[in-house]
Length: 343
Image (cartoon, rainbow, N blue to C red; front, side):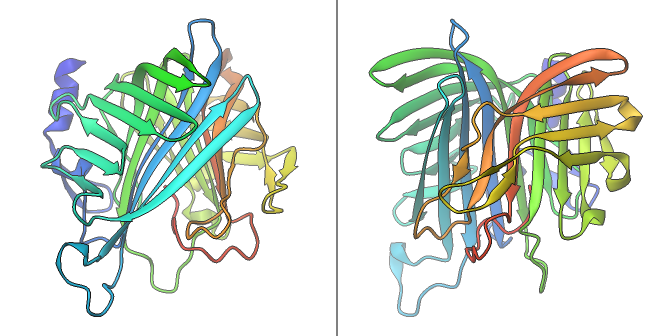
């Protein structure tokens, strides 16, 4: 496994969209593309099995500099970051966001630095060869520090825009929270995508699922509600090989709903998922309905992203797992602009 991770980390690959990937360069910033993001999510447990979910997301958005701006504060890129913690067993959800320009090193995503950062929220690559990473996020409510080690090579999804995932990152670290320092272990998932906005196109209404199963396999699905033909997914087998799923090869059916007291949006928080070619049938559920990222007067969109669990059957055997669910476009009248296309 170590040799395959090293080969992937230093590879040159022609992707399904025709983009020529070069690694490790393509794990970092692409300022010639309009929009880019790095998403970290995961499910973690304390030694006594108290469960937490986390999200740390870095966005980069190209902008036109303001007239007259010069020097280090001249901004042709904006950097937005979201941080969220779900106390799954306690039933609580906390989130914060921050917006910066690069300025004198306030935010960025740089190969030379080997990190992505926005203030004191950052992910530093400890090794470009093995892709081991260190995550740290500090806010008024908590401090989260994690070491992330890939258990599989990254995968390249078949999508119009370049889209890369580390689908199984072993995570261990600490959470400083409520006057305690809690050791944590679990699994994380990392997504990285960069793209140009489609002329006249706005795909800001989608549902995205990540699942890490107890049999060592993973699944990613996304459904574009405005144009289901653009939906697709990737199944990653236990060896790390990625298998493409087009929109005809899976179904996601919404179930029970939750209405947000913050935005008024009505979200389906339970789903039934079927992938016939894998003989896979899943029920997705969440222990915490309120995992909506809503901040009044924010430039970012209102969306739901949170820790979920999966139970079901695969190839006639019971299966279970955990992951994350993202739902955008449910808050009507939300005219904010980031993000603008599905992961």
